[in-house]
Image 1 (cartoon, rainbow, N blue to C red):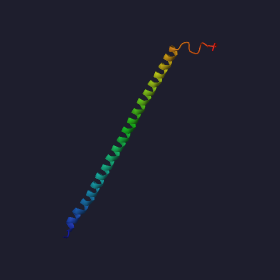
Image 2 (tube, rainbow, N blue to C red):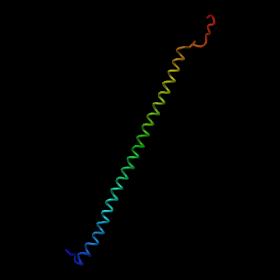
Image 3 (cartoon, rainbow, N blue to C red):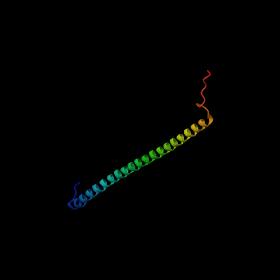
Image 4 (cartoon, rainbow, N blue to C red):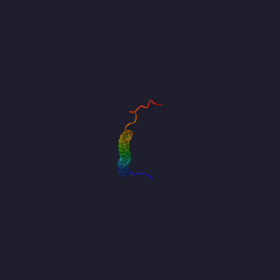
Length: 88
């Protein structure tokens, strides 16, 4: 099966066009994958900051609880450490 000169003139430019189209399709797939990876990185970074914010707020609430416990203990023993018993 031989190609005539006219058929070659039509077929060769089309193969070049098909090569360009194939390359563009491959690159668009890579671009989409890159965008998805970047979006996933941003989401992970955002989630990690949210966890840190929650941990910080719980830390502050623990410190407030400790302070209130210390105040109640001090109010509960008002004479502790003020009277010395020497009779022993």
